[in-house]
Length: 591
Figure 1 (cartoon, rainbow, N blue to C red):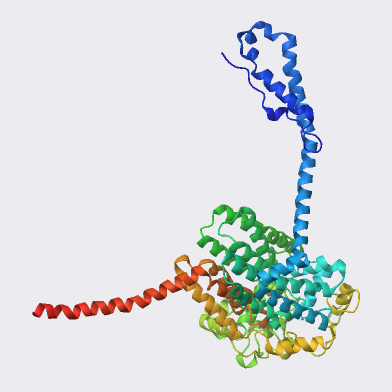
Figure 2: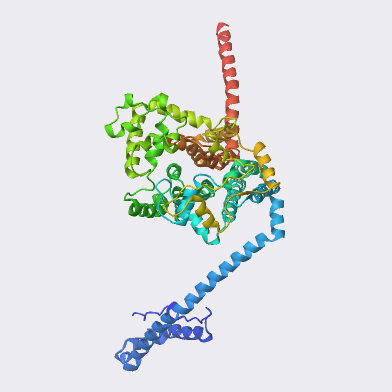
C-alpha cells in the first residue's frame, strides 16, 4: 500500500508585501497538510477507480496552478525583503560609524589606547601645520606627468597611470588641497594599520605597538612626501592594506584573497615596483601552504586591472605592456660601469658606449641629462625602439661585467643606511624633497602642443596652483624637518630587529614577519638593481620594516627567543658536568 505524496509546506507558503505571512496562509497550508495526511488519503478507497473522477482530478490541478501563481507572487516580496535588509544593514553600519565618531566614543577609544592616541594626535597636528604652511600642495618634476595624464588620459610610456587615475577621480572638485588631504589621511591610516595589527592580532602592549607605528607617522620627510603630487604615498597605502588583510587572520577566504590581489594589482599600476610585491606575496602564501583556490582568486583579481591596462596600452602604443621604460631605466643602472671593450656590442648599440673620462656624474644622467647617449638616437624619447635597444645593451653589460653590476647595486643599497643625509643626486632635485623658505614658479615646459605644465596645474585647480609659503606654520614644519627625521642608520637598525625576529622563528620560515620584512628589503633593493638610489624610494619600505620589527616582540617570538637563550645557557653546564665525570673515572679505575 503506497501513501499519496505529501505537498511540501514551503511550496504553499505565502508572504505579504511586508515579508510577513498573511493571516490565512497558515490555515490554508495546515488544511492542505491535513488533507494529504488524513486516513482517507491512505485508505484502499483512495486508490479505487472512483477516486479518478473528474471532481477528484480537478483539485490537484487547481492546487498546482495556485502553487505556480504563489511562486510568481513571491518574487516581489522577496526583492522587497532583500532591499529592506540591505537598507537596515547600511543603517546599522551608519549608526555604528556615527557612534564611533561621537566625542564620547572617541574619548573612550583614546582612553583604551592612550599612547597611540597621543601619537596619532601629534601626527595629525603636524600634517595640519603642513597643509596650512604650504598651500595648496607641493610639486616634484614627475608631478606634471601624472597631472598631464589626469587632464588628458592616455597610457604614459614612462610610468603607469594608477596615481593619475586618483587625480582624475578628484579632478571634479578642483582642489590640490584635497589631494594633499587625502594623501595625509593615507599616511595616518598606514600608522593605524601597523598599530592595529600589532596590538590586536599579535598582542603587543599598547606602548610597544605605538612605538612601532611612530617612524612613519612622525618622520618629516614622509610628511613632506605626502604633501607632494607623487605616487609614493598611494603605493605605500595600497601595499600596507594588502599586508594587513593577509596578516590579520591565519586563514583566508576567496573574498579576502581576491581583495589582496586587487590591491596588489592597483599598486602595480601605481608604481612598476609593484611586481616584486606580487612575487613576495606569492612566496609567502606558498610557504604558508595556501590552497590553490585562494592563489587562483588572488592572481585573477590582481591581473584583472593589469591586463585591462595592458590592453589599453597596446591599443595606444602597439605593445602589450605597462610601460616602455624598463630598458631605459636599466641603462641608467649600467651607464657608470658599462665597458664596450668588454661587451663587443652590435653596431646599433655602439652610440650608447661612453668612455669613462666622458661619463656624466650620476647614473640618472644617463636618462635625463641633455648629453645622455640616448639622445644620440633620432626620434621620440622612450619609444619602443629606443627602449628595446637600451634593454639589450644593458643586459649585455650585466652579463659581461657581473661583478661590476653587483658592485654598483651594493653601493646604492648600502647608501640607504648612511647616518647623514647628503645632497643627491643634485641640489635641484634634493631641494624638492625639502620644505623650502620660498616657493618656485610652476615650470613652463610643454606637455604637448597645446599646454604647458603650469597651464595644466592652473586648469586642474581652477585658480592659483603655485605653492604659497605661509608663516609661521611653514617655519614650524621646516624646523621640525631639520631634527625629526628617520636617518638611514635607523632604517638599518629597524631591519636588523626584524631580522632577529625572523631568525627566532626560523622553523616557521620567519612566521608572520617574513612578509613585511622581505617586502621592505625588496623595495629597497629593487631601485638599486634596476635604476639608481633615490631618497624617496626609501620611505615606502619604512612602514613594512617597522611592522616586521614590531613582530619581533610578539609573545610567540619572545617565547622562542627565551627558549633559545635557556638552551644555550644550559649547554655549558651540561658540558661541565660531563667533564667532571670523565675526570673522576680514571681515579676510580686506579683504585
